[in-house]
Image (cartoon, rainbow, N blue to C red; front, side, top):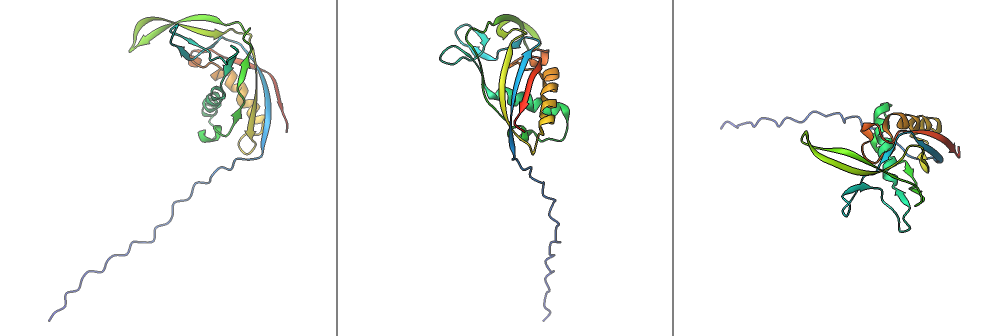
Length: 185
């Protein structure tokens, strides 16, 4: 009797492991204190359901409250603009303290055309901080990602090209200049 031989199972070739991506280490944090001056108005971005306009968020005392998420978005956009190989996720490791502006800070109202699918739908009224307003903030930054000099350069470019405007920053609003930059390193 002839024995049927079954074909040998082909053994998978030893596959090389893909090179593991090197994980960025975050550490050696330092603090930076920054003071900026708005060169163009900064437009609010929170809808007010009562007045149907975009307004700044306020705390219980009526002070304008600028969340740290605004800085995070500015840093992320500027890192992308500079294209220095810093991953976007690294921007989430830069922490900023929320800034508040006294309730006596004067704001202005600005009308903007509303476009829906390329068709005008009237005007939208937005609260804005006028040019000339100064905003102070502090950051907690990993030196493994941004050296103090590099973070200063990033903020300068952010002021020139991205802007501190919650909305409409792509239209040139919220441009700023650095008045003060101090670090503990």
